[in-house]
Length: 225
Image (cartoon, rainbow, N blue to C red; front, side, top):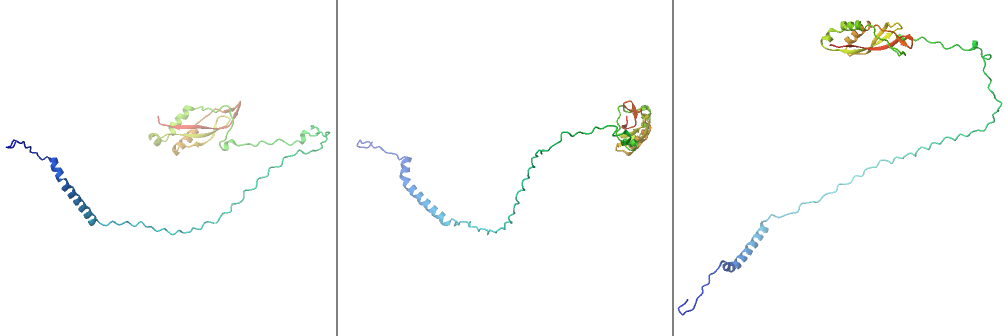
């Protein structure tokens, strides 16, 4: 309050007032700085050049085409066989066949029957028909012979094997020939099996009620028990 009684109000300046008063100077100063910066950047920035993207086309080389191959025509179709045609013929119905009698063909004039050629069955193993197969008669003696003929080196090493042996047995059951049919893979075992084969005795093979000579195959097995 003043001396004459008047009331005086003092206004205080705010931050907003100061900002409004200084806005004009800050705005134009910023614009000037931005303009100077952009001009400086364009003035000192390295010059940009476009790369060369040109290309050259390669010269085309003409290629000689192979000569045209003449395709042969397809083969001619095979002609179908002619359809058979029944021919007409006149056949005499009185034709007869003369009867065959022993008077016209006596037995004395007939040719003799073919001679049976003797075949040696013992020459090589061959099949002989039989109804009853031969059977081993002396198994105990065969086992003793196998123990005696077993090669000691193979027996001590535990090596064994089976030898298939062909036997040719005559009408009396006697072994006439023998030979190796399938080897065991060891020559010593094959030789031992042939030594044992001579000990075998068989019963005769029968074809119905007739004794016949036959070839049979038996396995002789050597093994360590």
